[in-house]
Amino acid sequence: MRNAWFAGVLAVAIVVPSALGAQGDHGAPARVMDPAWLTADTATNTATFELIAGLTGLNGALNFNGFRDGGLTLTVPLGWTVVMHFRNHDGMLPHSAEVIPDLSPLPTAPVSPAFDRAFTVRVTQGIPPNGTDDLRFIADKGGAYLIFCGVPGHGAAGMWIRLEVSGALRTPTLAATPTGK
Image (cartoon, rainbow, N blue to C red):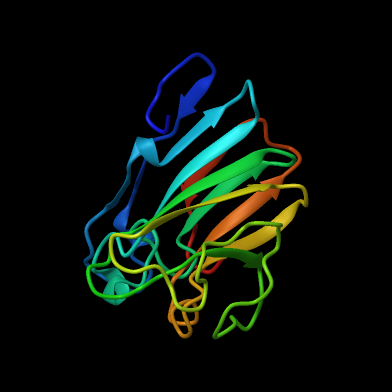
């Protein structure tokens, strides 16, 4: 059950100042992260993240959870199972998601995922508006990664956020990423 609350489950809530969340969209309202986006089951070492494509109109709806250009970072402990419940909230465009290495320059189309099964179906074509899919993988390699929209041009236009896998972390976190990181 996605919304079940039981012993061993943690929730994360953070309010992000507009100076951090907007990244070039001056005057944008403060970003508020919904505490339901991230839960952690410490009994099974599973991080569950609600990944929402096109949540707001920011960047022409080319965003995840209202953030663009790496403005949000999900950090998970090394060896944990990561479940991402993907939902395309954008009413007009298809979107997808895949976890890729932190590349520069950004690719313009899908690349091989960083972890087995760390991608939605139809990565290139995208999932239609209101469509859903689940990504489920083991974060078995430490380092920096991107959660990237694989529909050609979307990721390169800013539709990506960060994933960090850390051996020093005991529970997952979700935080705004400082501009320029």
